[in-house]
Image (cartoon, rainbow over all chains, first blue to last red; front, side, top):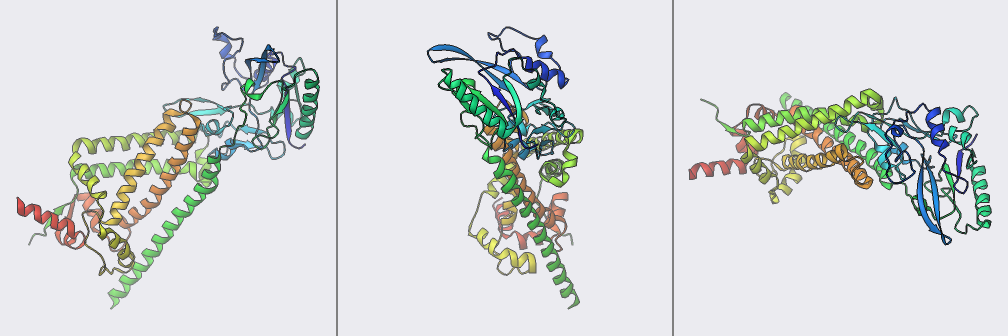
Length: 267
Length: 219
């Protein structure tokens, strides 16, 4: 199987949040946020992604086509084609599956530094961590890699009642998304578009949107943080060379000086 | 005849130096693990968390050392700061003459030096400026994660690495000249016991020696 992708058809999503429940069930995540639910003026629940909530439906109100619309954004790891989190992870805990393109966190290796979260163009990973001691672990959606590699659909896709979610080979999913955009446009949603196929190396989470991406709270032009590459590909190797060259220079100095002193003593 | 000596470092300065040695060793050894891919196994999981915690203790020790310096020898600190920021044509002369001296012991072209020679000034400046950059970016990384903008966090991590590389590379030179260079012996004694032999100061730090003579005459 080549690179995989998830299609999120927001024109079909009813915000039932079955995906959130299925995710917690399959991944054995706690629902502690639900026990602390407070009315904060929105049907959204829980209020944010967390170490125990890897996917979540975000609600947006939008006025378009002359009427008020409720837009639903299923959030979670985008599994970027160019994954900055993998680039900056200093423990190798974040990995990108060579074939499937799925980005995962191996928790046993994570030390909680949080670089993945801070370099993520979409602010997705969440840390369970203690600020003072720094102890922690990063969590995020892993596209149910355990299910996918065994021929099953991700738990959220499997459960989605209105069929808003689908999963498959990246190119097929993209084709399906583009075709669906045409259908949705024909229904009168003139602003419909596919989101993600050209961003950050191509996202593996593609959205059929009925309105501009910013109305969904999705960044219009998310960018791979260039600093990640300058840091990892230029400064780090140059730094190692600089320190190595210094050490070599000192060794050379030591040999020259010792030899000179020996010669002088013999004279 | 008693060998005459000149006080180079106060008790507070010597104590702070060795406390910084402890802190710096801890900080470099725990920090480099994140930066050297071959050491990654040490950075992973529980071991990595322990290293990150130790790194924080290193900062606390370095911070306490700095406070001790400020509280117990502010004058010494101020004088040293003034010295490292004072540059003259003799410093350019030192840079030109240094290779001949440090490789071949030829000091014929070496201009007279202050209490800190040019190389020592450069190292001290690297420690002060690098240390400040490391301290500020380090605090942002420690306490700012999630509350400061991601862009600022990214720059902090980047600059922290850059400063760490600069200080570490220069530190190798400092360590080498202190303990391994066959010609250098006086410095290590001075930072341990406080004193330089007068003859040594006359020869290696002539400007400082004259300054001392002048202030003695005026007393």
